Amino acid sequence: MTPFGRRMREMRAERGVTLKQMAEGVGVSAAYLSALEHGKRGQPTFIMLQRIMAYFNVIWDDAEALRALAELSDPRVVVDTAGLTPEATELANLLAREIATLPPEAVAELLGRLKILRRPG
Image 1 (tube, rainbow, N blue to C red):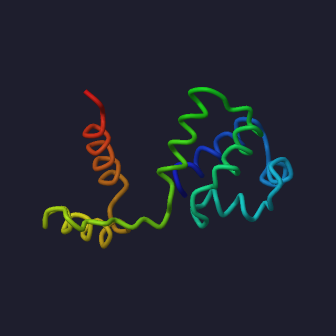
Image 2: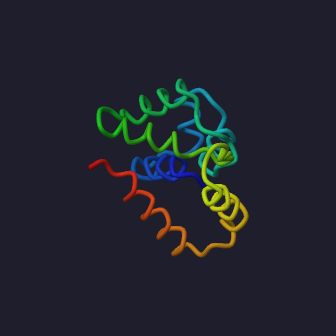
């Protein structure tokens, strides 16, 4: 499941909406929405994201947060380390090889550390 898929599922649950109901509302199949939630489909297109936000009446800061989640929800990531340090290439390769075996606590710790590094100021 991707971060966007998790949030979409949460929004459906908060509003008591089934996949089928949402699919009819945004004009796609329930199978597509299920695949999107489970990370078996890539990021939603801009137009699909707009349909989902309209369906849930998501505006302003919540819309920006949902857009940011969509950007961070590509389940098939490619990391280009050309021009970076050998350590960066090693890190990218180790992460690609080991991420499936990392315990959730380790993933949460790494993610937290990276988020701290990304904060402005």
